[in-house]
Amino acid sequence: MTSLETRYQIVDLAPAHAEAFRMLNEAWISKYFALEPKDQAVLGDPQGEIINKGGRVFMAIQDGEPVGCVALMKMTDGGFEVAKMTVSETLRGSGLGRALMQRCIDAGKELGATRLYLETNSGLGPALGLYRAMGFRDLPPADTPYIRADVFMERRY
Image (cartoon, rainbow, N blue to C red; front, side, top):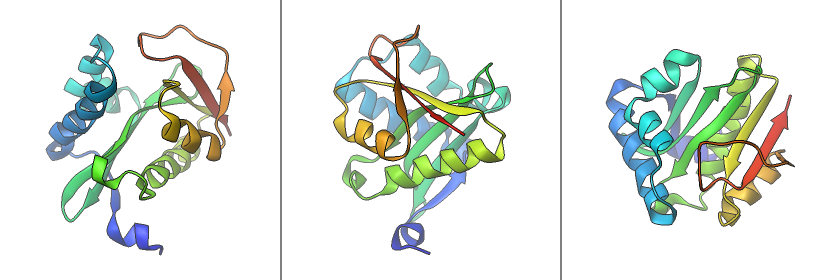
């Protein structure tokens, strides 16, 4: 067990985490962009918009407090979209983002996913570096409900 694993626990979203999932994501999105209608729908109802549709939400917990999160949203092509990934500002650079992404990769495999897909913004350099380091490759632009999305990536199984 690494020191990261002893400091953080990554668990499935529980009803008690829903507010933290919303607040963690609203904080980073609002810092760099504007909250969009799709954000509000997903963040306002992760159970209905993600989990009930075959997806997963993972929360990183440290000392009983949610400090990071990520969602896997089921896609119609057999893949899952990695979405709403963030880590508390004080923990950025700690390796927690990598641990959350690895949990997504492992879960995708467990779920029989054909690929993981994500949309992001070219201004988010550390995130892009993480995604590329974890095997994601750039795709051509795609239709998206997000105004901020200008980078599209996937990781095939």
